[in-house]
Image 1: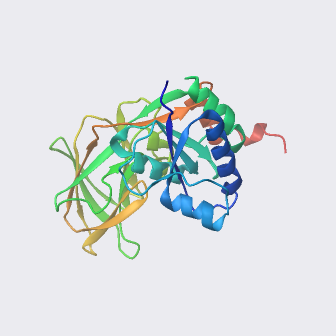
Image 2: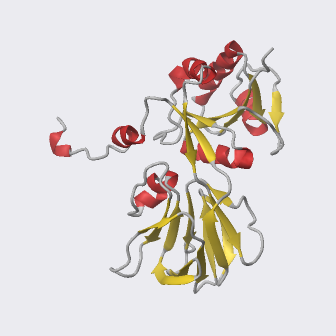
Image 3: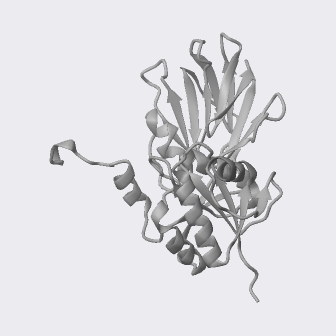
Length: 297
């Protein structure tokens, strides 16, 4: 007899409309014979605050869990948190979008049952995404040292711009005078990097983006690098500290701390509809190439 599949479920705890979606998900999992494992904070939120009727399933309280699939309920921020929780387990993640844009989490609330049937039938497409790893000269990072979207080095809110020396595999590139610098994967090219002028990269591109934030110089432009380089940053700041943010999780670093950023040894796997392509998503979610002059008022 085939062993029942296990589904790890993660979600944010501040969207009331998610309660109905959660009930649909648990009902669909039961119909599909998939065993749910629920992240403890999400379970407490659904049970205690939203009064969702769910049985006492196995709860996820730390990183010691095993599953065949992970479900992220929320927006892209929740998806990034789910990717962090899954970590090096390389469990494929299915994102159910209860947020706004849903670039990563692109399954809707209305097709949960059919989506699980397609998953069982092997009809979903799996997208392999690179991850960035950060090493710090001052020791271990306080938080999780990996990022699916980007690593951003930024000035503190109350400080002037910072100086960021960049070396690529030990060779000096330049020193950026800027508000910050974004180092992004192809997955992250449509996130923070895009908002500060970086190029869009197609999934599977073996590249890393290097995009300055408000640089003090007209000759400074974004760069696209091969993903096999070690990128070393040495940061100086008048306030003697700066911020480093990994997928939005930020911590403070001391002046002259040296950071080394490279491609991680593992990947994140994202489940997609077979008919959904990256180019179609660009057009539908970012309105890529649309011209307001051709849109009827």
